Length: 113
Length: 113
Image 1 (cartoon, rainbow over the protein chains, first blue to last red):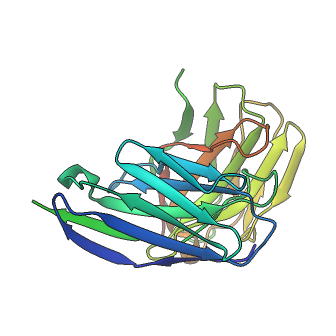
Image 2: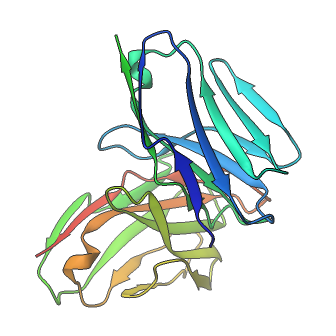
Image 3: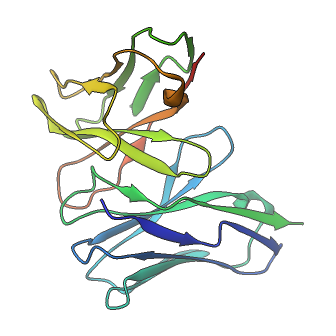
């Protein structure tokens, strides 16, 4: 499948600040966009996802925005905490194909106390 | 429910050896997938299955075989291990309804000497 570009590759913020990670894609057939958090040595865990008929979704301190026209989507974490430190992966799925996720290369987020 | 269970957790092989990585899920998910994770590369799809008896290739299928004889199990076979297959392998599963989130197992850390 076509790649997902994820930026930045590393991000360091102070506790309480916001963090934003952006992903871009080129396959216009993509219509499902999950975000995973992976702590060191652990499995990827779904933290939020968005489908193409929605522009924004929020879950407490986490939000995802989707711009289908520009083909990019972003993860926003507000009021960051040290336990938010992890690697975050964006992914896209082709239409009806969540079993065939294409992942970005990840962003290592460090939240400094 | 145990979720997605992968065995073994760690394995060291010699070049040329074969082995099977096991994956089982107890959530009655139709879709199952295998990914490999290499440093700085994100997760890449190896093979996937949309139901018992149906498998297909992902982005990096060479050197791997799969089968899906039951809904619960989706083993990944390395035919003749090569050092390039040193990686962390994750199995994931999801419901078949459109755009359902994938749930990951804990991974198998495989080293090929």
